[in-house]
Image (cartoon, rainbow, N blue to C red; front, top):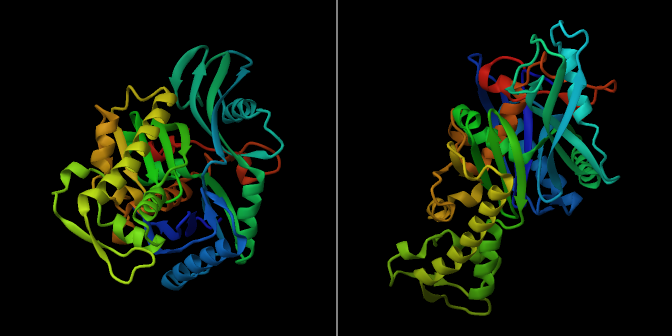
Length: 407
């Protein structure tokens, strides 16, 4: 992959987003092209229509190519949805002789040991991120190379995906003449897109509300420790409006942006015009009624997210707070609704920072995180962990992105 310029793709239920980025020479990145196009080929994070998905991918990539003046042959792709799973795996190796320093080969060996997890035949690993080392029982070690001990252990965040979905994604890309340079878990990308370094170092969560579903990730001590998917997104709000008010999907989408997720904040008597199916004239509707429909679904979503965060075991201690992002987070009152459900936790709107106005939007959070992940990789850190050299068999950490040093 060309490290001077990287291209990334976030393929969602309603849109395909593509970015091209390059190092800015000061330790950051610069966006040289960005595009979002409509996508109708994805359902709940999985490709449901190859041709429609390929059309969206090609449309987004072509617009970026025109803006950047460079062709796109390969993209770093975010992968999420219900077919993405993440587990914590453990590995250990003895160190001989005990007096010698731990080497990078030892680290690769122990991480490889943690990856020896038996998977169903329809799943495969897409990424392994070491999150913590132990040396002779001492925990909390991030950089073990150079230290001395007799037993090295590791806790590794393993992400897996359905083989069929990976193959469908690769086929959709191939239909456009492009290929996947790397697959990155979308919850990880969303976190890297909007969380600040100090929030990743502490305990923080990111909630990415898409159209078809919501991605959740928890970060602790500089690494992702938990990822989950809730099959409810902003598209379900539109669907509720359409069914209850008997409108077309397009009219429901318009009305959604006129409403809010906290009905009590809306003054009674404010009216909106609703065009129902089969009618030739719009009829007035109290805006508070519209907001009650939206609030019901958003409160349900917030409750489901809280349940997932509680399941992670980290909900009680999230000093870095919760960052809401994705297109659904822009709904009026969404942050306030989540704050109410989350209790004592601080909730904020998460947008990519320091990348320019063209990507300063929650809808581009995952794409921005993909760009950061791809460009911040360290060639010394990204070391092959198996003989075949596939990207999915390489080992890296997030710590160098936070400290500027390899682990």
